Length: 588
Ligand code: GCB
Image 1: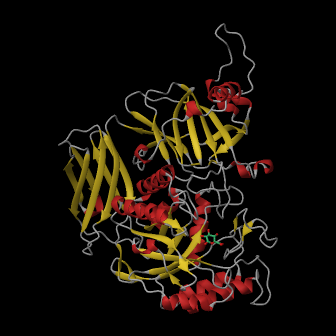
Image 2 (image 1 turned 120 degrees about the vertical axis):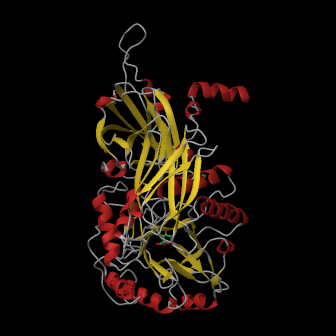
């Protein structure tokens, strides 16, 4: 039998992927990118769907057009002849025929490199959903899993004047992944965030993390930095000119600096989103950033920003455009943030996966708090090591990417996951990891409600700082009173927020308040929600700002869309409930 299998493998090349299981690039591949020399490789690339994985089976990455004797080899892969596409993008919106494609897509381009050979160069892929591999001049140099976080690989010495890069992206849903195979959003595939080269000196600053010491004194900033190539005792300089900070700190044996600096910054808040220019330098390296300082904390059942109790006037949002799929532009992001501002929000839940880092940068500038999360969503293979590795890797990558953004106040470690022992172990470990990596934020998760006892009952609730629940009284459960009972009966020692509530409404469909799918019903549902949760919760996040594509929504009224948006998917048409929520938030 064994031999037979080997024969088959030989004949059919069943295991063709094996040689390309290149070690995964993970969070340790990331370095601080703000304020560095960046050379974008975005723009026109050649592209092909690769339904049978021919790129690997036929080793197209070798790009051989001639044999050893110089004879022409007939090839099927003349990359330059392939269709062209703009990167970043999602193939699903490229051509109608690609809409529901799940599999591999191959992206490739040539580029020139004119480095002077003195420093180091890193390639950064902003995001590629889900698994991706990179070939540079015929050599595989990286592989990454996780569809929404960045990865990097050093390419120093690997570039010539003329280069060929190939990136394969595979969005096949698989059981052990994060998320797994079933979820309520559209599985866009592609190289949908920027590809760029980043230059550093030989010895460089790997990470800089600055935050207000969360002791309620507002007079100290903590600096955590990591360097590469420096000796113990050499120094790293931090400058925050507006605060009069210009100080050198010795680098430790481990290449790190961790220190507390006396400084009294003007505090960041939604009304006054004040940011400071900062610069860190060591040897020839210098990085800059714009950073706000604020404190977010809980005490008992309440949440405080800079010592002032706040109510989270939230809204959830997917990262999606009908024209561009998940590859949004800054204009799209501005429109989303402005719409949330119009709604009266002070916070957005960027559900259910890490959105582009520009979103947090823009939220920093505009004064919008954020809840960011990883797609630990519904049922997962909680027992599998690979699954935990994927989840913790994504969490680390997200935190490393966005931890200097004052706007981000909450790390979400999961959403509506069945309460088993394995899940508790899995998610409490993620929660612990978030706390270890970042002492300046709160953690949360959408926990479970027990519909027999009618209370929030979830063992994970003891671990997270803010307990959140998704509840759809008035929609999946028609009886609103259930919500009243849950609110009355739930006894927690920490803040409770409603992380989702909503009802589908087809834009422009009006009728009786009791009639499902009408804007009138959706609006009434929100009025009831606000009435019944009043006094029990520290925040509420309507589900959702805009209608979004989801193949699980098969009712003709939905037509492949989750219609719980307060506005339609065109981001322009606002439903009645938009005004209902706005009025409520106005009064809060
Ligand atoms: C939920 C999920 C969210 C869904 C929503 C719904 O609880 O967290 O992803 O889209 O319900 O519309 O059912």
